Image 1 (cartoon, rainbow over the protein chains, first blue to last red):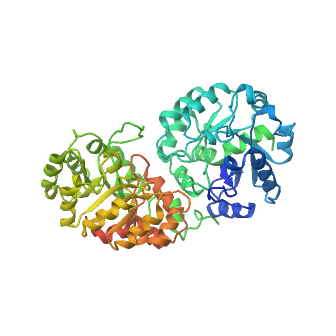
Image 2: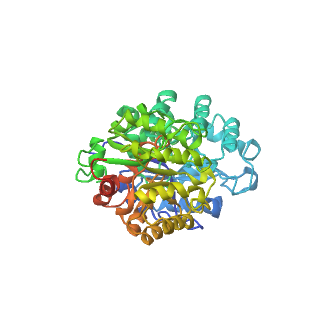
Image 3: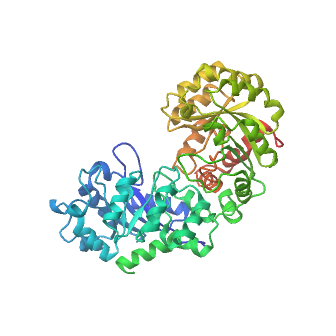
Length: 251
Length: 272
């Protein structure tokens, strides 16, 4: 019998234009997930930076619509409200197409993320408790701090893939911003996960793979050996993520 | 059934038991002590050894951060630390090219530090001196004469520690055992090339790689698992991370055993 339920919120699909490949079909991704025992995943487009949000959002919607397993949900990418590049009724469209979270890449897509550009969307996302994945702020800590200060009511999922210990950078955000959640993608000190859970609560931590940069299995083993009790491990593995999505989208 | 549920595989056994008796683990790349740029959960010998015991790591070979990044802690002090943990700890003698007198003084003591001292550590990128520079000549000649391993920090594209530099060292010192730390990270084709150009002399050490999707698989396929060594950079990363990274790679259990312990035992024997 499977010991833990895993929900991966940080998974990218499709090939990017610089040669970084990932699963092109739901079947390929599900086979990869099954190899390690991942139950569900939030997926975003691997070439979002290169292809842009308009193309990526359609690609992901098509990908999710071709998934017959009902184990996958999509992530859409934000753009400024003023240009009309997103659906008029964004959140209804997300619900219809099984898109459960948002992300944004203002750096590659050349805009400034703040109240003027996405204030209304972020206010509604906060009200609806919709997760916003901050993966394109990876390594951009000063920009991330500013964004978190601007949108403290939003559920923001942060991570860092440098593997160079991030405690000095992450802990202040976890202490002062209760809506910040930390995805463990490249937090490569498994017993340090326990410390974060003791300090800020296991509810604030999320297993995440960052596939295809990392495989799904490495962080599963790390979490299992974090030294936490099994109830906390289960929360971080998948229960937290499942609950967060149910709070925003229902069961 | 996932790899973790299959109890006939190493992955399944480690998932259930943490420590697997017939699969010892040697960590060939560690450090110790604090460092300027990073918070460490633990960095003292006692804390690190306690962690190793929890993870079932039989032995760690390390170079002390303070011997590498500060000229005031000398290798003799590191040897004393090892004496406190004779089963778990072995040391690389840290080589700082900016202090040639220290190199000579320390290597004069090398034989008296055995069996704890097993080789040398060279950190060219951080010390900003190419590995082929004559400033390392005394140390590398010493290691070459004794057929000692030298753990080089290597990185793809580095002008200090990349493939071209390592190739020069391999040619100049034919009996040197090269541990290419981080496997010339990112320059995988040249890492494989280096192994093939110097058969039996070059080992690719895996620190920072376990968990990175597909890289261990690529190195095993092209260089062979017989040329790979496990490393963690402890206390940067911890043992559960690297063990999980190897277990989760799509290679055979025989390959995993080579990485975890067989290659080291072929080099050093079972009692080193």
